Image (cartoon, rainbow over all chains, first blue to last red):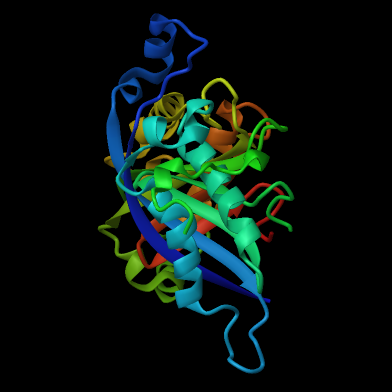
Length: 138
Length: 160
């Protein structure tokens, strides 16, 4: 079994607010993250599979990039996550929630291999890993 | 394509309203420290043979990079696994305040290990942070001595 990772970047704006809380409560918990701001996100998509005996590849990297671009980058790049993405009208656009939704977007689009991990860097000091509902052991 | 504007495309309903997903959140820190590898049980020649340049009697130092990974369900209230500011405060208090601009050889006890290798320091940092966090929350600790040499500890062993 081989793990193959494709890395892409997208830039987006967001702010954190829980609509069920008062302004004071939001300010206390989220602080400056309650202000509108943005990040250069780095997304690593890791798939697992056996190399094809015909091509020697687990998956065509260009094909994987096209899927990620269509499903994720076109949807989130240079967007305001709270305003432009309907999903984040209900959920707070944290890296955790972004990673989960990116998994949900990519997983059904992969036919020749299995999604193993979504790693999403918000910046050089914070990233999240999501292995789907079944967890890292697969 | 039916609708070229990505804003209009919905995210799948499957991602909504089910049991909180479990995510691993990692925060990175750094500290600068000096040390010298030298096991007091060995003589000078033996230490020089085993540890080489790391045994320089005057010591040397590194900018260590520390990654702390918390694993848990995403809170439906905050969207977070962990409040990063709270984790930052804890790492500052337990680790950075003591280890940054310090000599590691002053900070490790004989029970931590024979000398201040990054393996030994990583084990000590694991115990310091694991003891300060709620049970089972600390999932992985990665300590980079340089970008080329790094060490990882994971709950329930390293292997996945």
